Image (cartoon, rainbow, N blue to C red; front, side, top):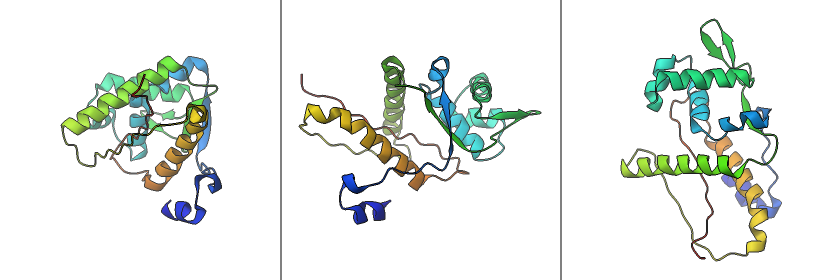
Amino acid sequence: MQDAFEKSGSLEKLKPAANPLKEIVLTPDKFHIMADRVYFSVLALLRAGNQSVSQIASKLDLEATAVKDALEALVNVGVLKKEDTRYVEPEQVVFRTSENFPPDLMAARRLQNNAGARKAIENRSPGELGYFATVSLDREKLEEVAPIIEDFLKRLCLFIRKPKSEDIFEISVDLFPWSK
């Protein structure tokens, strides 16, 4: 990733990151999956190995029923298959919405991420990192910011990704106004 930035010289020269995973497009009735970190965390731990529902629940500090519900929902959208009592991923996938993500669901997910970040900061959780910048900006460029952030996050995730790891982290990039 560092090489890509050093060799490119500027953001404009960077090519979009190729996604090696199968993409599943969620229909609007399934958008709630994108708004809850539980689905992504459960899937990541499942990818780390054949873990039981109770192991996943314990690792994520969730009730077993929440894990079971998340697994069944992931089966329903085609991300997982159920074989006997096991859940398996036929191939590694990513999922996204079929159209712009509704603002209320985006707000819910961001609030969930911020609550998780606050908990990690207060507990001084190992690996918790935070970087920030305050900038006066050109509001006319705001629409151009989203694809840049999305591409950066994809690149970063591909760089740090370790499919069999049980260390589940959330990356969140927020851009919000301090001024009126």
